[in-house]
Image (cartoon, rainbow over all chains, first blue to last red; front, side, top):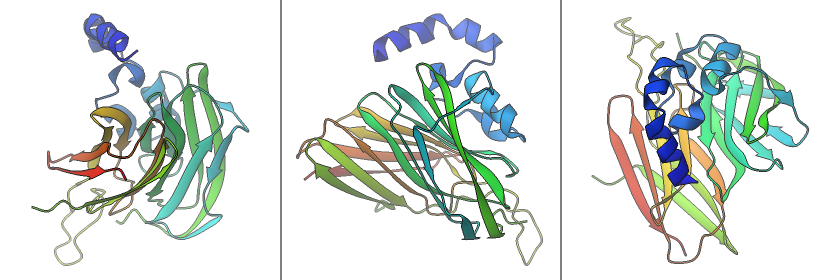
Length: 150
Length: 104
């Protein structure tokens, strides 16, 4: 699978230069456009080629109801969906909504944890990319002290 | 220089639970120096990779909104005692750090 992707990548380089391609093909490159986008839907489009996601109850997004310190908000995403390719976390009201994206190779469990910064109270969305599309779960996290400085 | 990455791995059968903590300022680029008022430039990890015996088990792309001194955890299958887990990161200034852990 790895080899196929490499071959496909080589063949697709010219095309890739012209199109803003879905991230799956360029897993090793930091997706700057997606990370620099100022709106959540733009960021998701830049990352996946579409901003359409299907809400799924198979995704568990574990985040605090109230984060006292927006500089350190623990987030855990778990899913029972199969053939997961990536897990991304988007904080809608952050200046740059796309926070982090985990590329999940075959054999790795799609259960990830990290700590993120939140500027203000905002919905937090977990987006899980599988080979059958994009799925999401969302939760509002209240922030009492913002963590984005300024 | 000693690595500033700490990694703990717990093996449960062939599943390895990886917890990692690394030191990094993760500057957002929007914070101002309280004394001079000058904007502190962004300085953050962009890419983090985990390799088990050289095979990629996780790649993480980070923005500035990952907390200072980032913590990550995840699990992967196919691990066995004696495997070498390599953790490495690259930041937007081209700095890098890595550490190797032998699974036990």
